Length: 447
Image 1: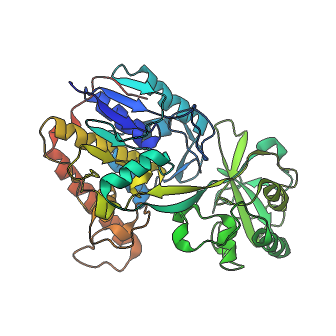
Image 2 (image 1 turned 90 degrees about the vertical axis):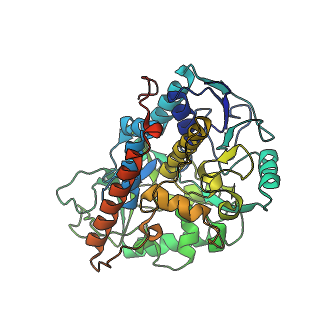
Image 3 (image 1 turned 90 degrees about the horizontal axis):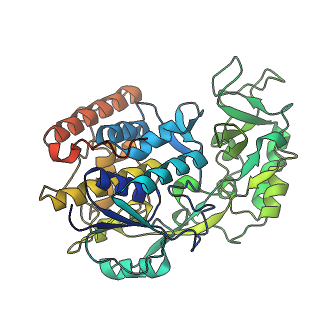
């Protein structure tokens, strides 16, 4: 289909965007700077690498995250199908074997004849139609070019990743399998139970440990879903055991009782050879991670396959810099992914898909794709592009972004069920009038 579209960034948003355009017959030139130019967060040269957790959040139909996945199914997301094909057990969440997932997406990109993969750094805004999905670790020169184009100063925040440990190094006499409220043993998580004294000693050492960036962070500095565990602990001694370390629904088989706190480990791969420490994003130095995290019962001899890291992330002031389709007004440049301030893996996939739909609609003379604000993705985009949004900060899909129901419902479960029902109805109705968006692909891009 004539002129090619440039997509910058081989992450979740960029790969979804490129594959969606190719499925619609559009030629794509996809740029990825790795491996020639590494980032502070990535560990491989693979496309669609998950740099923090390996969880894509809840699959429950009555959750905002689950609703977003259902919407992506309706829109034909390629990467969500890949995630399901590479899933590892994670209770009510969708978690993936990150290596298999990246390999699968990379293979789809490399085999797609309409996509040219270019392993180069992009330093300026490309000519012609393009989607910048370079992520929050966007190259400084490219980000400066974006800043000049949108006429807005850059903003920054900090992001952190959790460590990963070798399964064979865990003390299985202490660590046990169990999902919350699963009383008969087994489950999708490993659990490290802490008694009260163990918890107190751990938190004291955690907040006193040496950090890579040796300063206290204000809430506005931090990527809200990835706050370092030591920063959370610094807000109050019991904060962790009411948050990531809450023991609710967990029974220690050694005592038959609920522990004072519990650290959960989630499988990194289908072979369960590695586990990440859930909620343990961190800014601690590597020696301190070894020392402090080995205080956790069952991790006394833990071998760290990857240490946690912290790095600066950047995003644009989307409500005052982009239009309702994430396009820079007056240009052919669109943004997608976390650089827009939309937070989360599935949200990044969704923004890449939405960018592709709008690029395609523009090329065929169709109307812009403005999804109903009553849905998960529509409500997020509305928040992110509403000029009335002040003090813009990264945001993930949540029910707080949805327009209120006409008749208030006091019961939380019933209210959420109605929000989901209304959102599904409105999206289905919208898509029934936009057949141009859902032209069946000619066989390409399947997982």
